[in-house]
Image (cartoon, one colour):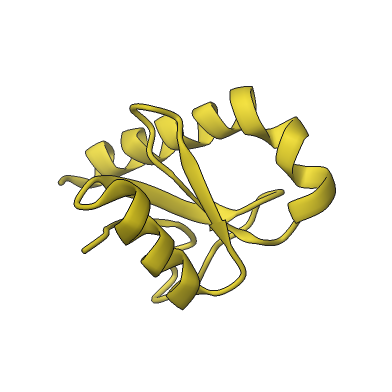
Length: 89
């Protein structure tokens, strides 16, 4: 996946979050990790990357998801990357 494709993928996931889940999730889950599958708009929440990875495996299998924090912000920061997509599995 090229950088442009990754950015477009992340933008679709964040748009799905903003349109469907932002108002519902932010009051009670602010700062938690979220993985959004942009095609369906479905998501999973967790408080740790380990738990999120497990939830992604169970919910999405091999589908690509975008991970960030409820309310905004990076899930992790590695080498200057503020957000990332991952394959579960």
